[in-house]
Length: 168
Image (cartoon, rainbow, N blue to C red):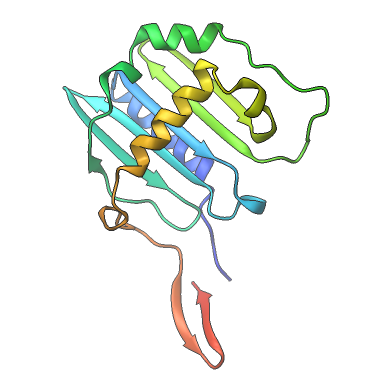
């Protein structure tokens, strides 16, 4: 039987550990657009002593820490206040089981966590919350796939007749 990581729970625990280490700036981005939780990724960015760091947690593995700095205008108490005061429009028809994204922004001592369901993106395209998520995703796209290395994969592939099968 394959044991998976709860990426969102592991990401929240990691963020709490960074807060306890007195890290001032933390951004967590959880993409829950995958079907039934498959391939959902939690990206955690933090700054410590002027250096930026990033890691990723999926249902299969926690990944290495990459030394990478974010654009300066994306972080700080001013953007945090804009994110906190903005209201997202919700359409009349909603979707209970839809995909979306979650963003956590922590700038000591204040923080905000907000969800953006996919069905709200079209009517809120110019909102600060959605633009912030899009800028962060652009930052993630700048990372080459080979820079990520799984530290503790929760699966391995074994060859079986007719193809591969994933096992613990």
